[in-house]
Amino acid sequence: MTFGLFALVENYHNDTCRAIKEQLDLVLLADELGFENVWFGEHHFNAFSVVPDPLSMLAYIAAKTTRIRLGAAGYLAPFYHSVRLAESLATLDHLSGGRVDAGFAKGGFAPDTKHLLKSEADLRALMIETIDALELLLYQEATYKGEFIKLDGVSIEPKSLQEEIPFFIATFATKATIEFAANRGYGLLMSQGASLEDCINAQEIYFSVAGFYPKMVIMRVLYVDSSDELNDELLVSTDYFIKCMRAVMRDQKQPLFDEVEYERLLKEREGFFDGEAFVKNAIYGTPAKCLAELKKYDEAIKNLQIAFNPASMDHSKNLQMLKSIAQEVGN
Image (tube, rainbow, N blue to C red; front, side, top):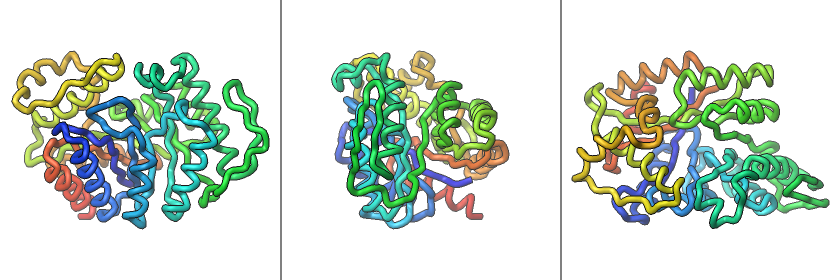
């Protein structure tokens, strides 16, 4: 089992510059602590999870680090031109000395399709064609004819530095998506809402198709505490993220966060979009309890990485959480 960091640039204080800086601080600490990967989300038209351009974030991190691998979880493939995305990934691969991993998702929030001019019905097919085109463009001269993408002898420069950039597909444990990844030999990026049982089932579906187990990255909310009890801050921060995602999905304005609203937010949590699953699957409690929970994952899942999303609104506490996990595992 290895560890990664799931980076969502969560803007609790209505200060985008602060949110970005604090997220980058966490990435640099993860690199220092020996974490294997950072995985940036991609969200558009979003005032809370402010990460519309993961490539820019990763290019910055590439210049500040020498070891941690640089991934997105994932690039919203339907909204990229395949040639431009291939050029960006290949350039980032050279800038980082061959540390790029590429995760892909189809997206589908209402403002994405509205403002980026894509039909929701086409997103899955567009994702698949974009990935197919990237598989050619990154390594060789590309000729490809799909329903949406057509390439005729396209040769980008530079090609990727790595002989093969690892590809991953984001999923909520959807069977068709897992089978697609298995047929291509791609890894899986499992949602914070996917339970351990979902992840076990996903790796078995994958194995039944591919004949081998996937590399699996499981995103998990993290809250290291002095108590094993479920902390109110974990509930509020996690559910607030879900509430904002629901607002974006419906093309509604996201509410500003207000700490004095704790009690009201806690009462509303049952109405949030899948907030219960995010909290239920969280790694939380004392360092010893967190380690015991991680061991369950390590025993059940092959080729595993857990990517943590620290869930405090206090930046210093998030930094300490990563240190606590690294120290506990090191011991």
